[in-house]
Length: 555
Image 1 (tube, one colour):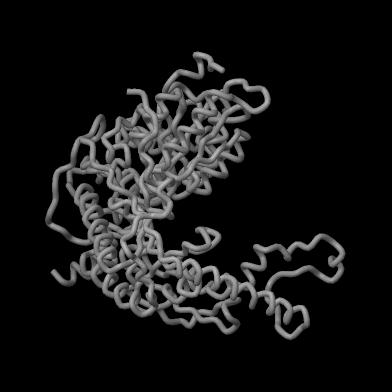
Image 2 (spheres, rainbow, N blue to C red; image 1 turned 60 degrees about the horizontal axis):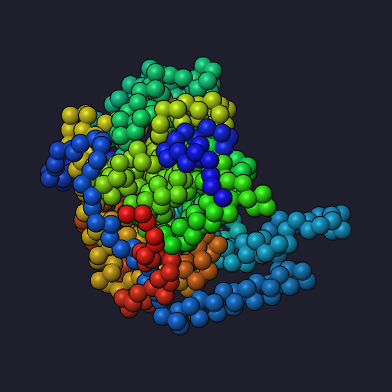
């Protein structure tokens, strides 16, 4: 069935509901380090020189690793049921919330598998998360030491501090999470001028001149027609997607999209179909079916078809296949929603994200979303696109209409970070940080591969997942790294597939080579000790997910 001309308008409006020694020592605490090699900033918008995309690495582990992983989970689950039996018999104290005696005849609130998993599996490794930090979360930070007397059900602070822990977990890609007095002068001035809180929405009495300055600067930085800023990165996705699409619309979502995108899609009421991660054949198959068959039962054409992808996927470290997706978008007259939360500031010769990285005109992306919480060392998010799209969101987005306006000091922090990256502040510090991040990323990834670790993602991605697989090694890895004064983030099921538990490193421009070498030396020793060097440099057993290139495109 043919779609109407209205739905064939490419890049049209979306108008229905539907980031000497004493000086060096201080600089580490301040969140930056000195490097004399600088280069002037490049041009700020328009078209860029395309770069080679590079392959995303998804190497498989030996078969015995998967077998041992399943066995590990099986043994822990069996012991969990045994301990639940002991609790039921009163032989072991249960610290978890449970029904009162008078509620026993009601539907149980705490007997589902999630509660079982939390009670018997998560509690064994709970000490590896929510560690209290008591300093600036820069390249190094300080931790408050804590211990447990009841097997991780509760913790108590010892009063001691673990100092100078190397931070390999924060999204501080460009090192703007800093407290250097010289860099933060303008932030302090804006705090004195405007205060900290706004106490009103943008539509009422919370629309300050500094907010409008930020939006103009974001649009200029991205090379887009217009932009709008929001106070929360997560809500930028979850509250704006329902304003763009609704019932009668179709969302094609990558299977590894972030929870904020998934929640926004569900809240919209639109039909959601998932395509395999970065698989152009899978995406084109969904597009063909959507155009040819239309909506279920009625077979009417979809009001809109919206493709939702991320620039850098935060758990895999892979880059979106943007040129191929744009080609499919144009061929089937769909819209594209690109989430650049992890990629803006982190990739591209001048830090302008995946559009610059691939040499693509950003105006070919219909909805360009990003956050200020990572590369810019602040809080909030933005949506950029055509002026009519942004104007529509100002009056129809729940995040714009009902949320309190961004705090002025936070806004100024974003402004000074963007100006630094663009070179508008008269320095080359921003460009130095972008180049330093790229160098650190490639160095860290190449060394890990040489050591024999299995790591996922693209060679240009500062998100570096190192595969641990076995559940028992997740907690052991994190604790051992902390003993070596290295803070890491470990992730397991259900946040990842059950056989793909991992440690996720985030490289920063604030990391010195000495820091990275210390981390790499510790990883090399620990990798041999707990035996997690599984790499055999074999291709993935899932080529259909990642390596398809023979999709059809119009010449």
